[in-house]
Length: 138
Image (cartoon, rainbow, N blue to C red; front, side, top):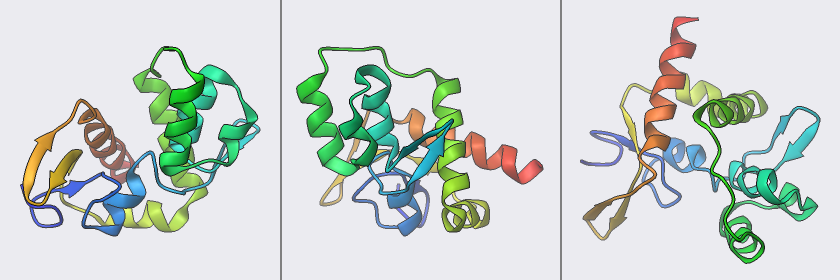
């Protein structure tokens, strides 16, 4: 599995710009309903805690604060995430164009100096594959 050759790794340390932008950590502002977010990661924790701090956070800062404030919380449903990912694309036209131009399958794994480690977050890549397929048929 070679990032950018066999797959696009949706990972903050991925080798492709598209893969790095598709991560929940990426600074990709969007609006969902009437609320503005700087990242999917910020939304992820905001949905459980409703702390306004999350509206302006992205990357590890959002995750760090989320871990400090949350004592659990339910993960979002696939339908919720799909709506958030679509809002992310609408808020970032360049990202949407890049997604639609891509052809490689998406995945999510960690790459530690060439040592690949699968994660429990593989569904992220699978959901991006599904969204791209749907958008290409519209």
